[in-house]
Image (cartoon, rainbow, N blue to C red; front, side, top):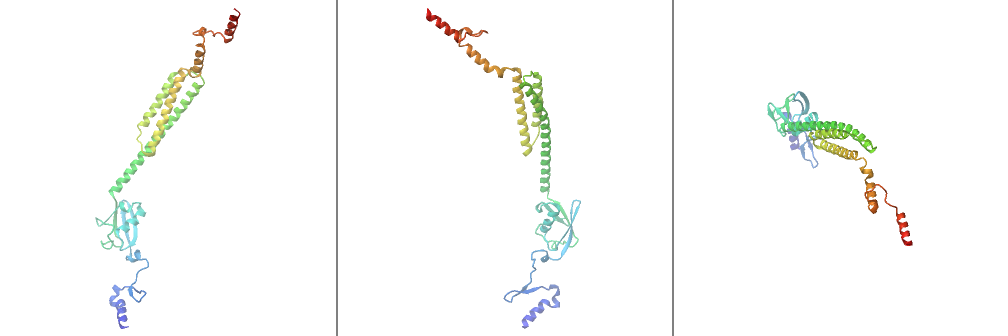
Length: 271
């Protein structure tokens, strides 16, 4: 019992107030240092301190345990700044600190100030992403502009098709001008630098213009020979029919009918 009393005194004696340790009895009677329920959290890393982190023109106030690491600070700042921890650089008293370094070990106290800088590699990567997004937006707008012009020309091609199908003779100049306007739009598309989805849209518009040019060529040919399609089969049929008769070849008059040939044959039988 004396030993237990002496041990208890060593723990709680006024001479040891500055080093007082909370203890607890574990199953089996062993006396050990008492652990906080949230061991590993803020409660096990000293009192809470307030620090100010400067990031450009922004100021961020953090309330963290005094024994936190600079890695902990980065995680907290990620929620406030949107910067991933790996993209952050923390400086205290002019020196960059590593993630595993503890605040209290390098002199960070209540109301201390820390400087936050963005990693140059991360900054360059973001600038590159912004540049690509801007280029893609520009490409989308350029393709959309060409699409609007082609829509107008599509109406012109449709009008020419209706005229040719209706048998109306169209001036050849109309086909030439329409084709030239479409080719100008094709050149515009060729000059657009695009990637990803914008590139696919440009490719689709190029094919659309090419289809209209092909249609104009077809309409131009039909317009120059309006009867070529409708009468070609009949002409072949008539020529073939006339070639079967010796008396009708090359003549505008119709060849003798088969009934006259039969009559001639009947007369020859009477002789």
